[in-house]
Length: 228
Image (cartoon, rainbow, N blue to C red; front, side):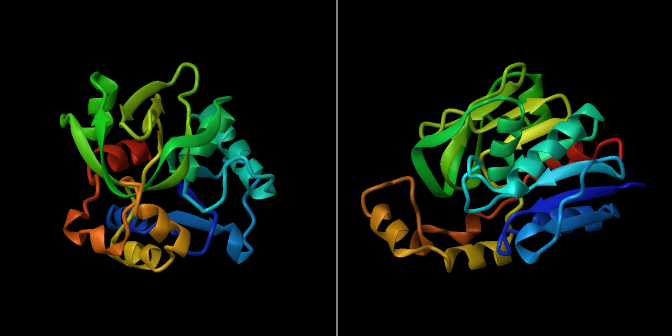
């Protein structure tokens, strides 16, 4: 069995529940953290699937690691290796496919409901529910690339997820666990706290509600590794 490649952009944004799930399923994976000095491989030949994590930077920033991630996304798709993108990772998938990434209509931080589109593709990834509550942390968002299927939307962000065959891009984070959430809430700065006073889509620790923690344990993860 070939390894799953996980691209990590910053030290505080590791694979979390995704790693837990892969370990539980006995699937080998390789995490490359560019902020820790790791280099990204030049191609996907030795890997069975690609996961691209989030980060505080913009997908449009002129960082070599971001452009390398886009090269790997395209290479994985050309080789029919499944690709999954979380937040920044989903935005990089959109850019790699020629779609625009820009400022979101509203920033989103915290737990927010999204509407799941009707149709077999959305049900395959996210089940039969018409709505899911997911964890968000973004100020930018992607547009849906040509030939991709839109899977979800919300009042604050028109494009929440899209798929092309076995490839899934999300504006939100399904990989969060309690350890990751605890770390992230310590990172909320004064700007976020001030803006939360007049921006209902920004939540901070007192509005978190850890009982909301949930992971899409079947849907996206199962489809992502299908065929490995």
